[in-house]
Length: 192
Image (cartoon, rainbow, N blue to C red; front, side):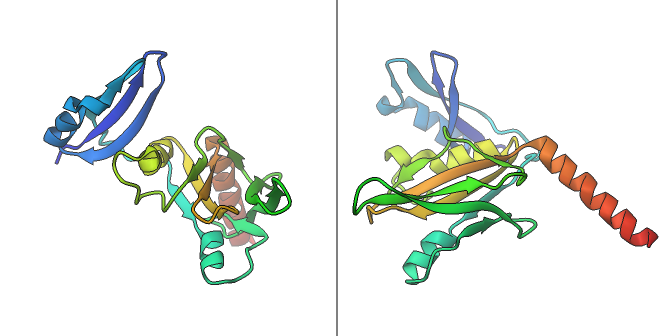
């Protein structure tokens, strides 16, 4: 079945995927609504690519789960594939009683932060109402994952109604180097 993505086009050339996996009728209905255009932008649609994505979207909710279970937050976040530590977790105080947790990539981890893709929201990344400002977080993360591996780390803040999402991307060359290193290690192991 052919599916369509709704794209928010901006007159400055920027574009952002805001919905994915729609039928043609759903995409057309979305774009005909009055709230799908404004000064400097409009929503359009395009056929979704049949090409397999070259990246994977990983979500890490271990910090949120720890808070919900009244447990200590981890000091590090693990790579979803290798299970090696790749991010450290620090608490940033904004004043005497408020703050937020900030993951930071470890040197040589192969991950870098994409600050433009991250932010904060209320609720989970995929449960916001359709017209809510954060309702496109899931679509943005999925669109980013079409190009490369994405690690979205969800952390709490002192505002109990807010969740922070920090987004990290693995550069393609880092992934290729990891694959080459793994192949060399396997080859070295079989030669021994």
